Length: 536
Image (cartoon, rainbow, N blue to C red; front, side):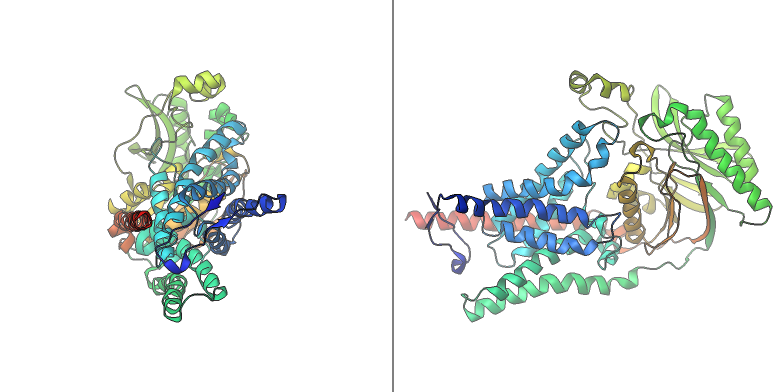
């Protein structure tokens, strides 16, 4: 069997060679597959709760080595292995309570997007300046993953692993697409630098040109991140607000945490009243407003007088408005709702979650899923409905944007609150379903990236932890433990200026997708021309 490679750069063309069939040769052919899978694992290790963000660079360097010069078919397979190596451990929390089936299925489906990126990177890997085209292809893959299937699943965006990294200021320049592009470009560029150092057979002029591109691929993201530092600030522009974040805890972890829904509500009311006693004793500063987590009242307070009394009592005790996470039914629709509860007027405003979670808050393909496992359909007996409007509560003159849990992974869901006037952001969440897994830390890192992206204070009230207060520069100033009742009180800056990322919105992502398409088109066109020339 012979293998022939065609290249845009003739100096890179491989001579036809006979592939040995010995056992040793077969083992050698397994090296790229093993390297692809292990580099995916390395990328996973760079994600929270670890602070090894820099491991993403060697991960993509190895991935670049594996893919460069391969056929698109080989790139497809190697990309799939890289995707599995990354996503299987990253998403293991999705099977904590429902078993390995959904976890394995989700990772297998999401890895298909990475496989397609791998095929594309292999195709463009012979182009001049290939790290640029390859990094843009990765972002195009993330863009697709964030939109399909079932409205997308952006978990695992490269940007979300960079909350502690030097590239973080780039989030303020162009959001998660620009931040992710810089990291991937630097990783591919790192491999190209090493490759050119080891390679001697190019002409001096070609070598200098390629070396310049490789060095720029590494240097430009780093220089860009340093240059973006002035965009990151925690200074107050519209004064400050003293905010209280309540973590009431839950009776037990897992899917049945809300089997005692009244207990969950009572826990949050109790922690609020405990904080009120400390305020009265002069131990803690009086908050301007209070933030409860998602699902803190799964008993509908509009339909149940006892729940209404519990919330009302807590609001009066603390003497401040509370944002309450409730599950309500209105006009036949089940809604995951944030309710603004005034201590004197009661409920005065609501926000309905817009990006609801497939297989968690609604069940796509219900009949098919039921045929596979009836227990899964019983977990989501009735689908939640989507909200349609951004949620910005006016709480003691502060504009607080609401981004409920899963929504924090979606660029548009966070940006819409800021463009609608939010001076700070709250991400009420409920992670009790996922026990003590890494999920809560992965989501917390998302909120840190969002803080820098839009230059806003971000609070994260969670039923069972980890709850936190995050400054506009991405620093966590206070945090709770997991599965404890606790509260956080802090004066935080309010800001109204918009970062370039906020103003540009989706445009950087569109630009990078177009770059990816341009590189892919160039490589395919060059390959077709070379093939025609070879047939003549």
